[in-house]
Image (cartoon, rainbow, N blue to C red):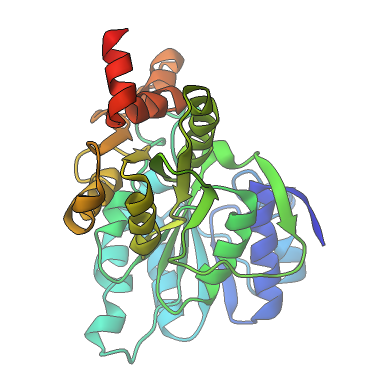
Length: 340
């Protein structure tokens, strides 16, 4: 049965169902149970783990505010047979436990010739929009996609948040699971029963023959809005949500560009060494002959996230910037834009 569920509750439902499915799944992090004086009601930031301790009292743990300690503990737990889900809260905190991620979780399976597995999920909030300032608003997923041995997930809808979380927990490699703060209270149809959305399989959210728009995370909804508005220009865009950036479903992207001849990539992370530039380079290398116009990337500026609301709102890209990029890559629209 399918019903409407928030993105946040979809993540929580996946955690609960996977803990019911597999007794080796454990949850680590700050305030998962509730924190001092909260009587178990907090359930972590915004409540995705609310009620889990009541049902699984020996498998849900509150930890000190020491990311290096509990992420390291989660790596060790994963290497010795458990399937921990550790909540980093803001991804910006990864700096204090990066060695555990970069040099331990990502490399143990390789360095032991496959004898050691690290089935760890590290949940991390990211993104602008909630006035959290430069140290709590970054989109750092390119850092993790750069590291061999890690899988990186960016769900854009409640249904994908649930299915990708289930897939991440069942995976035998470490997965960094990015949740955009501004998507938490978005709603969508989510099946009630357990299900898995395979890692590395993109979703075509809208078909069209004039331009391919590859959008990541929160940018998926902005790309769909831009595509809707471009219909008035006679342009039919195909929107692709990669869902995961490591592994990246390049086949779906290449096939789309071969049909449309044009590519725009929308990505909230910074432009230098980012995912948008990586996808653009891959398309230029492998399907260059199919391109009939320049590849355009739409990203945040190469600057820290500002705190002032008006500046933060201007910082993150949106539908208007995506529409402008599409118009400049399709020759007839570019000429019209120039003439106006």
